[in-house]
Length: 265
Picture 1 (tube, rainbow, N blue to C red):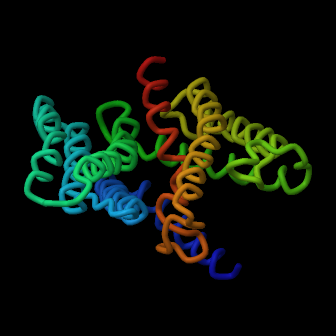
Picture 2 (cartoon, rainbow, N blue to C red):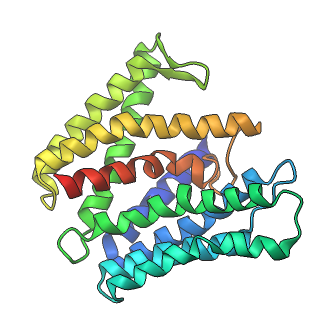
């Protein structure tokens, strides 16, 4: 428990500091998480003779993250993003020369790692540049709402939890916990309307609702993946907390929905 608490406090300090300090520390933090997350995903999926193309997958993930970030900073021409379209075909071409036993499973897992891990982390750049310049408020606010939803769900579930939310996948989650997490996230979202004004209160409350609904579904989806693979944690990188996918499963799931909400409304 002590190791878990220390790792959590230090990790939160590094996380908050990197997001707050500048766009380049944001870039380094989430770029590193993207690469480590993709590698962790490939390690998990490397069963039953499935051999994803790790090198190419990491290069594609880094390209997606880097190009979207640089596009938001207006450091590359927007039409350069179209280079990512033919890049999607590279795993198919590379598999011609790898001589592996399950080429199309390898291709599928290689691309899935990019889409499942790298794309959501990359879309954070669309949130981090709301006015054409970097702002730490939206990204840090999203993280705080995720932590609020998780904390509210934990304490409400421990105190009042009796009705199982999705027992087949995660026996510990309850409807009471979900309600507690949702209420705390909405309360924090309301306060953010005053303290983090780069998004309006309407937007913060909308983001809180998205996190309350899709954050827990992201957690369940990652639990489903781990159960299907017969593992308890996705990795051991963070002492007492598991791996990248364990810690950021909610974020990975909610980011595409948040981007769509903020861009439409």
